[in-house]
Amino acid sequence: MKTFIAAAAPLLALSLAAIAPAHAQTGAPPLDPVLEGQLERWLGAGDQIFENVYTRQGALDTSLDFHAAADNRGPTFTLLRVSNPAGRSWLIGGYNPQSWDQDDGWHFTPRDFQRTAFIFNYTAPAVYRQVPSGFELPSQGSFQTFNAPEQGPTFGAGPDLLVNDALDTALSWRLSYGDPAGEGRSIIDGSVGGQFFAVDALEVYAVSPIPEPAAAAMLAGGLGLLGLAARRRLAGCAPLNHAVPA
Figure 1 (cartoon, rainbow, N blue to C red):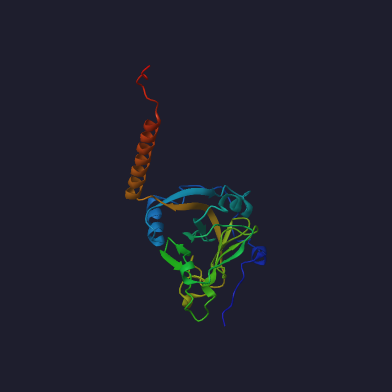
Figure 2: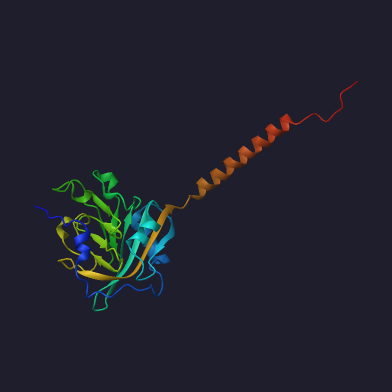
């Protein structure tokens, strides 16, 4: 029988003495052109526009700041730079095809065509997609994201990837994403048992497709034809300039 670890508040109350406190981000932002290209390939939807909607500023930021910036912004990529007490670091994250919304609770995706979210480890690299419904427990992959004011971005029921309310600690315990044979393993370092990692950087990007050049040209041509038709209509309605015979 499968065990579900609910992504809920008690997880966040555990002692995190070994984790460094949150601090302002330093160094280059997590997103660069190489990572952007890899995210587009994993998404498989062509070139995308990446709009930064949230960057964690430091220890004063909480999950409420994340939700205030990212909620109702449509599909997003969440990027995390995390580290362990030994100083090893990873770049990880997830793609959420639905809008974040702190009041929505679970976003369920009962059908396979809805299971388009994924989480990833860019350092590895590896990508983990939602478990399809054909697995022995069809509902296992349906837990796409969890939305609550007291939690940061949270994927899957493991939780497969969770950021706490202070946005300074991450946890990964796979259940809803990736090969079910790896259930219980962290996407960060492959460990089992729910290891905690310090969040050194957190950014959220809204994504949308870049219009195809042909579509843009067709739109411009269509607008030009509409303008020409409007000018002709106006010309047809203009008053006659010749004098009327007496």
